[in-house]
Length: 570
Image 1 (cartoon, rainbow, N blue to C red):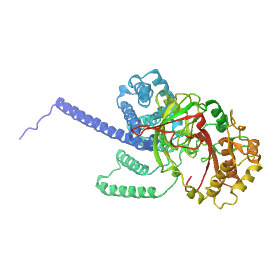
Image 2: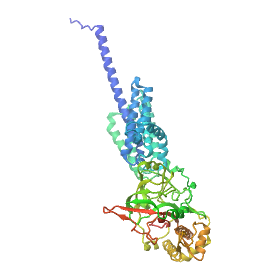
Image 3: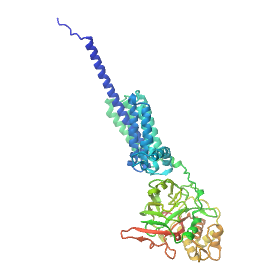
Image 4: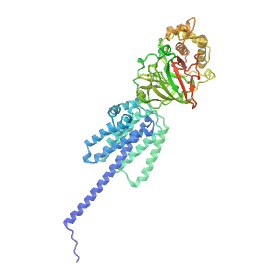
């Protein structure tokens, strides 16, 4: 008879201890792996949600510059909660350092010492940008680039979203993962509200976000049945294709906060730009006011556009209409042209303002697509507003001697007189003329009443004023000519024995006559390169051997002209 082997109690306890240790180690390993996967998923959820801001910042690279490190750091801060000795105060300290020091270093590198060491300006401007960047995103027309610490918005969203979502993702109870999903969806909704109308590639990101959330929750809640994994995957892919196809074909205007934001720019504090025209000519007729390099020869430079007349002066409207001369919005790094502005000659010119130039209207040519202030004047961008329908810019802090900036834009080709003659008037809502002199409507009917098209009427008005009027600024040795363009002055111009004035009076009169005939019109103040007879010329532009051009405008080059909106030509 064989004897049974005996196992000592000590050996049994040792074996049990070893087994428990192995099981505990495996359990910790599985838990760590689960948490690592969950943190990776929450990071992807945050990035997919904030991808709605890519168009706001112009490029994926610029967006990733802030979004990627903020998400990684936020996820690492959440992961600190896996170690008991790193929880609580250490997490709060890391969060404060990331938000108040690391974020400003990335968003405002120019304020740091050697672009690496944070300065007091980095800390103070970073703290301010943490809040003001959100207002900046809503107030400025995208893309805004990295203007004035705007990257602090996406940094803050990614940082706090990844910390909160990651914290709930590593809770022992997997049911708390739903809170991570709620944070991710809220993150996506917020960035959509701060984003743009362009939703072409956002549909794909939204579908990817939904698939990722479904897979992760099913995995964490142990709802995945691997025997049915293939069929479940096929169903999910089919649903994704259907959702993507449907969302891509349905054109629904997205709700974005920018469309409901009324810029706090009040134009009532600015006097009529046209009223200052005669003073420029009188005080700076021979003085250089503006030098422009690489502007196409013969091109004019715009200062201000006015479409409202109150009986005394031409001025800008209150800006309630997007097509009005007063609808100025903060401009980003790139200005997207309107449909009517596409085409034309593309140019890139640099401007330098000289002594004598004052006021707030920024000299620009054509339709600007980018305006960049140079060197120490870069802060002027904070005060730069642009009106796309009017192709006009304003710097609320004022322009001054030495101001340098560059403009990239497009110059539309002027249609021929034959094309204008057959064109009809475009329809646009404009402010009603408060008090129009009787002489205006009478002269308009006399000059253009017999024309059949709006374009022919416009040409007839211009030709009639040119043929019957005399030009004078009313300066020394000039024929007497009063300044101003109120009702009395225009009645004097059109109803007197001699029609005499300068472009201030003639442009005002022609714009009002056009309005009396039902033509949408506005008055523009700007610079035109003139010859000795006062006619526009290309000969004022100096050319170098390498093709560079330079033109300098004096006070004598300031003048006013009329723009009439015609179908197909603008």
